[in-house]
Structure formats: C-alpha cells, structure tokens
Length: 376
Image 1 (tube, rainbow, N blue to C red):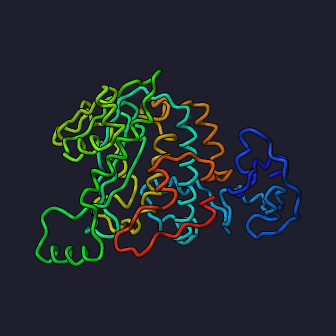
Image 2 (image 1 turned 30 degrees about the horizontal axis):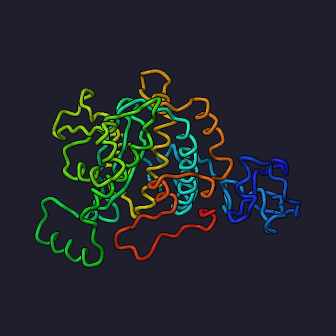
C-alpha cells in the first residue's frame, strides 16, 4: 500500500478516523519500516493528530496474522461440507487457524453486506422460520431464525437462540437434562425474543418507493404473533397495514407452490452444505459464536456468489432482491483486501452480535475471546 492511498487513521478515537468520507487524510508522516517473515518489509507511519503509529498492515484483512491463506478457497471448502479438520489438512493448518480465518472472513462479509444494503431496493414478500440444529450437545438444541426473500431466496437476516431439549427421552436422559440445567438453562421465551428481532429487521426492507408494504409468511408457531405484537414498531406498522402476517401449516407439502418454499429451500441447503448441520453427523458445533460466523460466510456466498438456479441463467439471489450488480461486483472484488472496521460499519443488532461474539454458549464460563483489533 502506498502512502497516498492511506484512507484514514486506523485508531477509532482519533479525530482523523472518520474523515475518509469527506476529507482526504493527510495528517500523517513516514515512520520507518519493519520486516516480517509472512509479508516482507512493511512501511510504518505516525498520525500527527493523535501521535500514534500504524502501518500498511493495519488496513489489511490479515492484520496480526502470521500466515496468508486464500480466503475464497477456505470458504468454498466450508460451503462444500468440509469440516474444519478436513480444511486444515488440505491447507496444512490447525483447526484454530482455520477458525481464525473464518472469523476474519465473517467480519469482512458483515461489513460488505451492511454497505450493500444501503442501496438495495427489495420488492418482494418475506418468509421466516427457524432452522433447528444443536451446539455443544444435543441437550442444547438451537433455533436459527432465517428471514428470506419469498421470490429471490435471499437471506436478509439470521438469528440464533438456544432452546431447552424437548421430545421423547429416556429416564436417564431426563436426569441428565436436569443436571445440565443446574449449570445452564435456556431462556424459556427465547424463540419469541429472537423472532422479535427478525420482525424488527423487516422494517429495514420497507421503502416508500419500492416496497411501501409487505407480507411476512411464517408457519403457525404461537410465539410468532406474540413476538410481532411485542415489537412496538412492527405492531404499529401492522395496524397501518404496511406489514401483514400470514401463516401456513408446517405440515403442508414442501413444494414450490408452498408460500414457505424459500425458507424450506434454505433449510435443505444449509443441511447439506454445512457439515455441522448434517443430520446424525459426528461433526457438530462446540461454540455458538463460531457456529454463527460459519453461517454468516456461508450465507454471503449463497446471497452474492451462487446462482439463483443451477439451470436458470446467471442471476444471483442478490440480483433478484434488488441489489445493484455493479456495486456487488465491486464489493466482491475488494472483499479480502482492505480490513473492515467496526467503528465505520453500520451494523444491525443481529450482525453486531455476530461481529462481537456476544451470544452465550451453553456451559461456557465468561464471554468468548475477541481480539482487540476487531473492536477498531
């Protein structure tokens, strides 16, 4: 990176950090060089506003990394039913290193999606439902709510909630569940709280020009109407007729004529493409936040890189969802170059939880480790 291409001071508390959109950043001076085994000689600078130093690596997605990997290759393997250990064997790296690169990739795609969403013009109804899997143990099943475009199959939002194990169990399993619940217990209203956030995300898709009103399709789960009613904005818009909630029986045939087809289709895709969600697999998630990071990068590939139909031309779900194809290509071309900064990225509540690893993992003491540079 050349000196003249430095966009801003990378320190978020500096007054020159937020000037890149309005004023070219010139308040820095050269501060020498340093050498690295991974990336060779790196040029260093000092900000004249905050008197702190930084380097060209401060703006790289591989900041603080000791080895470079092809992110597209890792994500392609992850989205093709390869587990972390299999990916690590293929690229000669440990599972922790692969998880680290997936976490970096997740932050990059969250920032890219936030930038792209400012220009989208959706003109379709929405479908929402929960994808069931588990993390840590089958005693801690989870529900990953998906908000999907009815026609485009574009996934607009995803949220995670851990549930209490239900269904038929032996006496031994009931005792085991009771013992585990003494250590960690799921929120009994978790589904309702999670779906309230999904319903709130519908408001971002309303547009006076492109989509002044929309219909939200779900199955007949009782928590969904309660969640919409408990959301002040969503309930007010429903009163005005701008959001209409329609339900379909979950027992209805899952054909393309079913209004819930889009979310049923995504259930199938995730189940077959992400190894940890394959039924009766020996590979499963051990950490909720890392599980969501893997899902985030998979959904980005689905939304912006894969074709909408294998035999249906070159259109992608993002094209059908009203995203500008030129801007999408531009973001994709620079996805693994410049590092995304949280302070410069306007994220929604669910995306922010994924970035900050704010979700709680059952039986885990304390919050997950988050590197300091991820807070920049």
